[in-house]
Length: 232
Image 1: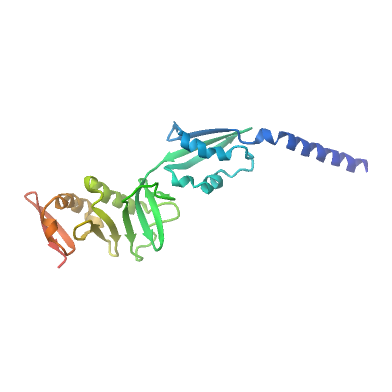
Image 2: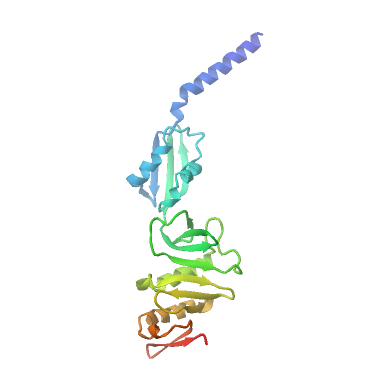
């Protein structure tokens, strides 16, 4: 009986200590860095919701996901906890560059090829469609790196005319169809992306493109003037 009493007393003391110290182990301080710089006030304001949660029980990734932190340019890279009441959060700063449409789903892709949860309010994004025959161009967190690099090449090659390309249709047999605003489709392939796009920039600045309605499959440059060949 005495032994049972001692056990019950110990349990009561332990519970009392936990209740007494619970506030001590709640989150009171948030140390936030984004690309090695201090986070801005807007981000800190959202992080306030982490305060007063148990530092032991809080699931940082789940909490940030619930608050749609991926809708910001700030993406959580790592975090740590410093007892008794501090959490340290490190974010990366990424911006949406283009979007990928798969069925009825839209994925917003950062400049580094990572998937973001929304478009950060950026308008007129280039839309990329992949043919079903292309296997695994996108996974849960990112785009296949080789495909991403080629899409970035397409976008960067037309730096002064980003709004000209509306859609990129990646077909089977490595055929890539560029839908041009106010002009015909332009067909390129993976092996000739760099050379074709260099020519395409001059082509889009020329008068000749307005006279073409059929898809353009071959682009040659002779004497610094674009020479077009249609698919026929």
